Image (tube, rainbow, N blue to C red; front, top):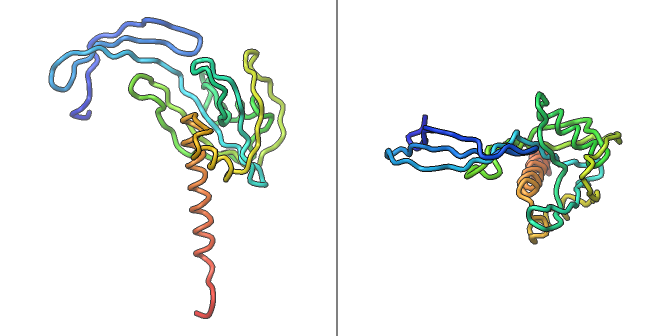
Length: 193
């Protein structure tokens, strides 16, 4: 355990909702003092960058009530009990954009707001997309938007894409493709050697 770790000495559930719970923990700090931590308990989630064979990213536009804005995001959703992140990613692709991934690769897993939430989100890139049937959740209203990766990156850099998971995933995919292109180019020999 880290010398910076806090030790839980008490906990109570304040709220248990459909999607999240709220816990209030009493902790002992490394220097011996006590404090209260409010923790949003979340089952975890996935987010997927769907990349078409012609270099288009399939995004969604939806209104997010909590922030009162319509945001551009990658398909994402909450893990169901006993569902793997890969299964959840495929389900969300079908439900939100009507595709399944022939190839699904994990990019990374990250915490969105570790100061107060347990939510761990698993980021994927989906390629070899295949049309697939899926049914949206009854309260989910969204619009599918396709754009070239370079345009999505430009929109992110201009602040037009403001969703954290989408930003992280887009920049990871962009960097991965740049690295792959560099490796491909540097493996070729040019001129007389």
